[in-house]
Amino acid sequence: MTVHSQQTSPAHLVRGSSEDAMTVCVLDDETGMVETLQESLRCLGYASIGTSDPQYALELIDQGRVRVVMSDVKMPGMDGLEFLEKALHRDPGVYVVLMNGFYSIDNAIAAVKHGAYDYIPKPVDRMRLKKSLDELASSFSRRKRIRGLQQQLLSDLEFHGIVGRSPAMVEVFEMVRKVARHYTNILLVGATGTGKELIARSIHQMSPVAQQRFAICNCSAMVDTLLESQLFGHMRGSFTGATDTRPGLFEYANGGTVFLDEVGETSLSMQSKLLRVIQNREIQRVGSPEVRHVDVRLIAATNRDLRAEVLAGRFRDDLFYRLSTIQIRVPSLSERMDDLPLLIQCFLKKYNETYSKQIQGLTRRAQAVLLQHGWPGNVRELENVISCACLTSTSEFIDVDDLPENLKKPAEPNRREGDSWHPLPLEEVRRQHIRRVLESCEGNRVRAAHMLGIGRTSLYRFLKRSEKNAPQTAAR
Image 1 (cartoon, helix red, strand yellow):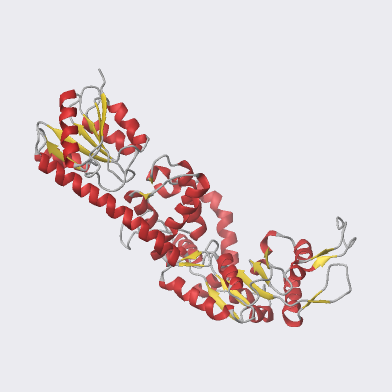
Image 2 (spheres, rainbow, N blue to C red; image 1 turned 60 degrees about the vertical axis):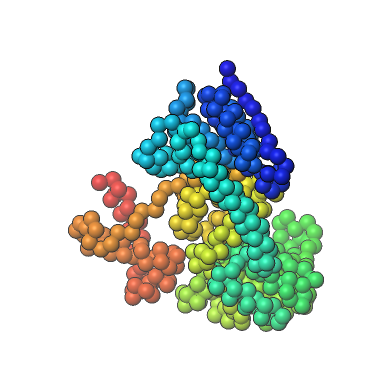
């Protein structure tokens, strides 16, 4: 017969509030042993729930009612090691103390390696049990204080919605403070997903025109005709579908700030029109001869190397120099890994509120996976990972199983020269070298050609030949 019993400790012995009290589940197939251990726990000041049913103990873990389980090793149906495995699978943050009448050092080491917090002999020595549980209670209390400090730190280190304490980000924040007061054009440079729009917003919020409008335009999302209408406005009947007259973003944000994201994707004809806005502070709606004066601060952003684009003839040098009066480089996440814990905490807070969850943090192994990842998608990729994990996690702590598949696969170790070496044709060595240089240049072919010391045309010709031969090579 399955027996469940619950005991609470005297009020003056319970550590902390009822919410913080560390409730212990006692699991043993002998009812008498369950009652004896619960009495010991009561005297030590710990609330407890006793049961002889391992499945019921697992349900308590699922419900978050217990954080510590004292389990006998020898039980019919499900032994202690099997219970330990299932308990850790359901909640990697649970602590399991195994008890055995046939104690040995080898068994204790094996149990700890499998994830047990402690392995104690039966009959249980009360002082040994007290020491083990007091250490756990102290750890829980310390963790709660750390979480509180992390929340305070998160609040203190937030810069207009941007979180960061790494030297690279502190430098960005200092630059923003300096330039925000002045009415000038600014160019933000950085890889996709680094948070350039947030930096642009912070500049506007700290500027003298913070009370005016902040307009955003993604230049890579529209063809030229639509982009021109979006920025400068249009007159009724100026093109098919223009059923009414509309002002553009420059008129909409007159007196404020216009943020042009991915400005490097614009065509040369559009660049000439942007240059006119910067130089003369005037625009013309599509289909209108009337010149309208505007007074806007222009913040542009790009993930391209605009200097290389200028050399390649794809970006106007006069526009580049006008836009880059002040240039701020936004670092990638791999350059600011010191900020990773803070960013994780920030996103956990955000998505706990969004999904009505109570996720406390990440397990150690999940943290290790995130620290080892290269984060090619930068902060945006990290936010997507935490959002997905918060949505799918059923525990108080996000574990490896809650992370996307691409993060679970360990990265291939870097092979040193001479490791598993085998001869390759010279053409293959050349192909691999060019591929690595392109990767280091983030796909920028102009910069890659410069680093390789060859002409841009030669590089394009080689890549075209390489792509053409790729299917044949794969077919062999």
